Amino acid sequence: MRRHLISTLIVATGLASSSQVLAYGAGDVFTRVGVAKVAPKSDNGDLASGAYDVDVRDGNGFAFTLGYRFTDQWGVELLAAEPFEHDIRLNGANLASTEHLPPTLTLQVYPLGGTQSRVQPYAGIGVNYTRFSDEAIDLADADLTLDDSWGAAAQLGVDLLIDEHWAFNASAWYLDIDTDASLNGSGIGTVEIDPVVVMGGISFRF
Ligand code: NI
Image 1 (cartoon, protein in one colour):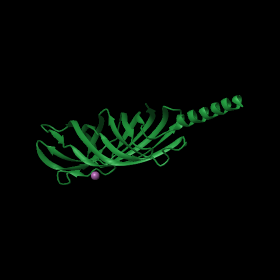
Image 2 (spheres, rainbow, N blue to C red):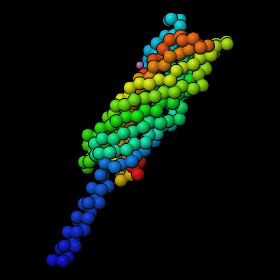
Image 3 (cartoon, protein in one colour):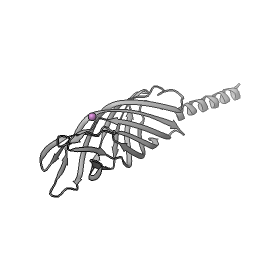
Image 4 (tube, protein in one colour):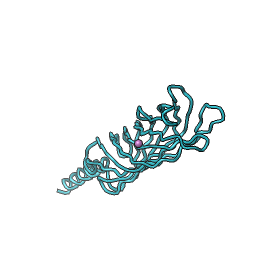
């Protein structure tokens, strides 16, 4: 009888700890780290009343996020990164470049949060703030500046759980980034970058 009770306890403990291993949800503090590609949309507008057709090229870099799950199915995540560098073609010629930092905060839903699924997809919506730096243009006596941008953001991603702490991660964001461009202090138009950011890497839950 006693022996039976002990083995029942062992089985119950085992079940409890195995569900703990996969308990994915409320209270999780997590980070995601990976390599990201920022791919601007193909038509980035024109400047100086149509004189220059603008083509912002892809940029790559390391990115990471920090997040918190306040329920099994709802969380928030902040995307951060090292500055991404982009070449900018004007009428097809590689004449300009910029760096930018696009922190993005999203409110997320995890439809399978709190279940035993090792596949944990998520979606989010939120806001992006982008700050440009080191703008350069290869024209004599010209000084290019790009204004900060605030815009909407959307996100899709999936974690493939490995164990209690680690998961493989793939995620993508759409960012609405429109920046006013100035040459020597005069406005010359708006550049619509509106990139898709794709990141592949790992997730870690603390
Ligand atoms: Ni836009």
